[in-house]
Image (cartoon, rainbow, N blue to C red; front, side, top):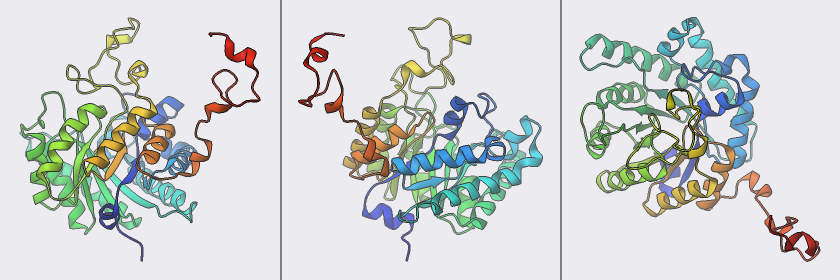
Length: 346
């Protein structure tokens, strides 16, 4: 029988690659700002290809690109009528991508995200959020997903609504908060307390995703790991956020004065980008801390995923093409290389 997520996590680390929004924006298939994944309907072959690149790089999970494909996001661009076909198509693309790698033990997960309508002072928003999460979870269940991730949620009360929708359908739930500046959820809970609350309500995996880079994520993951009994997830963004600027939502690139609005987020973060080895170090730290749901969020590319997979002991398909600088004309050590090319300082 196929092993479920929790069995897999009990046996060791898994890699979960996501971050499709940024990847698709960079490739020219969706617009920053609204960040609506219309690409799922307009260019499904591109989504399929990115899934396959992440799989080849070592992701154990194919996460359906339903992030921000919810009713509120589609409303803001006047295309709410596309909600159901977008959700169902994203789930089909993910399943098809998994099926194209028959020899790999892959999982498919559904995804629900921050609704952007939750307001603790507006009880109607609780009902609207509940309806949004329930419809997405039901479509995911119909598609046969292995589990569902609720992510980038900054309110404990909103996470409760998402978790209930998932557990009411009898599915494994991964609950990942995004923590803003100030080190607390938007309703004032510490990171540890927020995770303990949601674990006690039935979350199977708790943790953090998005907003924060590897270092600013790990500092909280260590405390979470010490204070919860369930599995822990860590999926930072691959950007160098700091104690001064712990998230990438309001961060400057001090070496560039030509960024419109002077805010590097979301499309001028290049100078703050983590390299593959930094993400590999994060993955190693996770293993040392017994954090087994390891991934990468907005900004992810396959080269990050591959190095993270290698760092936790996996041998992904694309490792066939890992760098081999011994063959480089200037830096290489191969004895057949011309000495004249190695002597000059470039």
